Image 1 (cartoon, rainbow, N blue to C red):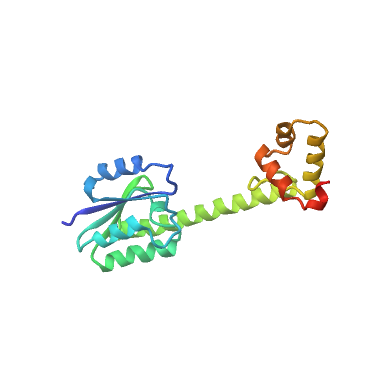
Image 2: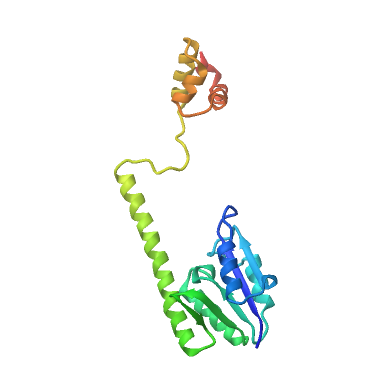
Amino acid sequence: MGKMIGYARVSTRQQDADRQMSDLLTAGVRRDDVYTDHGVSGGRASRPAFDKAVAALEEGDTLVITTLDRLGRSTQNMLAFAEALRGRGAGLRVPNLGGGDVDTATPMGSMVFTVMAALAQMELEIKRERITDSVAKRRAAGKDLGGRRQTFTDSQIRNALRLIESGEPATQVARDLSMSRATLYRRIQELPQATII
């Protein structure tokens, strides 16, 4: 019997892979055989630690991932990857898939993996649809969508300058515009000279 190679992934550098690591160790993967990508999207085709984990697999070995979304986002890609592993004589094991332990080396495991991969992709597409719908509704209602702060016209900056020149504290004028005092002064300096007067 070959060895187990574990793979963990977190999408942002602020996240940690402790839970995935714990699950992989519980599944029997040695700590030295776990490869982890930090701050890497599952949508990327090439992931440094993932590529190393796959390269470390030999015939009879098994790649262990905790959940399907660690592997990728597309059913087609996941199935092609599982098939490529089978072609190399390696297996894929997902301990936390549908409440059970799925091993693609078995016919039943392969079938369950196929169904779960399709469900994982469907869940992602439903999530995207909900986000798109929510943004459209917020936009139609005229609500703030977040993102970059509004930009101010030269006219608005000139009015802010007039307030400062009439005695209003620059800090308060900048706060009213939701910008820092330094940004306000920079914008005043950027005004065309003829319009400052």
